[in-house]
Length: 362
Image (cartoon, rainbow, N blue to C red; front, side, top):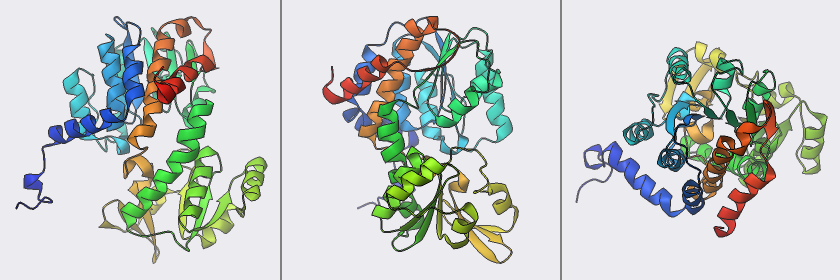
């Protein structure tokens, strides 16, 4: 019998992606339905800036089937899967990202996609809008999926409407509140081979993602403390029994630090400083950073742990996310394109359509 762990007997990357997609298709019926009810998108050039993960493939397939020309850029090179990129390129998506692309290469690819003249944007982080200072010519409407991106867009004088779906109740309540933190803890266990049982865990940032992380850590047996500059967030944490501490006090005694601020380069995770000293990689996904004789363990290079080193959301629950993205894209290409320039919450009726697809397929 062959050794099933031997790379020589493993399926080639393209076959592995096809097998994953076949499994994914069994558990994402709402996405398939949303794809079939997209309006005709012939003539639209859609730029999607997202995590290039296998769960996004059905959304891209829906856009292509509706007739759109599609460009894709990575929301974060640390979460890019090369096999997914190869599959998307073979399907007709304009995409050249690779896992771990450096900042210069990442910016070059984004500039090339913008130069193609997108008419619709679908972003996770608002990189394209920021690069064009909100004035990208030809863009009729956009979508934004993250709190970080929404904060960035609020700084811009937008020449087109952008629809915020991060703050929808169905996304906040399922993905942000319950799944990101849970999958982050599961990934922590898988990457380190360690539990958090009895360990003191500091959760920095007590928004929906931080609340989910704190709940998951406590469920996994950790002693959890919370740090957040917002008094209302600290009060909410205290009402659920979490001691709230200053960042300095929390870091002084934490054994595990989970950051959920949504702020790139947040002061509680000084990746550049950690990586400046001697480092070693004792285990895949774990970097030992020597800080003057004290070793700190950095997971996934400081990138998004649940996606950079783990699977992200489960396939069946992510069905809501991709179904919602397709419903929102159809809206942006039709009625949404006539809205006034600026930032708007995605209309409730669009979110409700995606929710009904997940609940009963209607």
